[in-house]
Length: 364
Image (tube, rainbow, N blue to C red; front, side, top):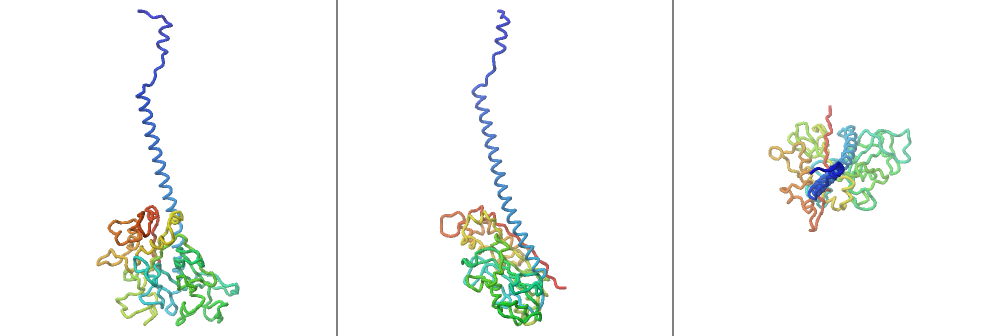
């Protein structure tokens, strides 16, 4: 049968339509692509958030560790000066900073604290004239553990820097004058206006009368330090105990100063502002006390000897919640639980970053 040209034109012009199956397949593929794209965007957002948090903590840690390094590098290393540092007996230069690992105990501070004389400028009282200014300061570091309203920067790293004069420049020692730098037997705790350099509680002794403390690490809530001796040993005693078994402080019975110390090591734990806002101060203090003190932190060397990186490894193990270690970390154990105790969201614990640095202290 022959078709007319008009009929052939009509047959060829008939449009080809999609079948129902083809439409369903296309919709399914489009849905999968949208889901994949959404997941990709969510992952990118999460990575970006984590990256921003790390940038915040990295920036804070770098500034804090640089500042501490400047003060330590210019420390006046003399045997006739007082130091408020870690030593094995009570204050005669002992920070009392040991929390002895795992939770604070009565009379213990948890975070370390130190005070030294160093050749950096400090702040001066109003009656300290420009012609009197000298580059010597009493410098102290502490994580503020006073929860009262009188000292608002609770669980934040603070720095005190009191500008001083050398002995002989001034003999004015009253409370309203600039106290000159003193030598033993005078001690830091013996000067009333310096009490905040050696105290860190909720008493008036922890408040500097001249408001000399400034917050240098608002995100730093844990501060620990120890010593690297010239014989390679890491310890919380600033001398070689084998070579000097009778030594009790760096000044008695024989003044040795820092002659056995190669470097001072500092470790800090930093939390970003967003994560900090998700937990209470009490919980953050609980987390801080779960981060081991150098004294009780298990060493990974032969016979349990401490070696570089042990504190950082231990703190990260606690924060990341190693199942083998949870029984020993009650503050972190209750993350996300409904039971009493600290409830730290896993993402908050993961956002806490640990940093450390060694500062050379060799005496030529």
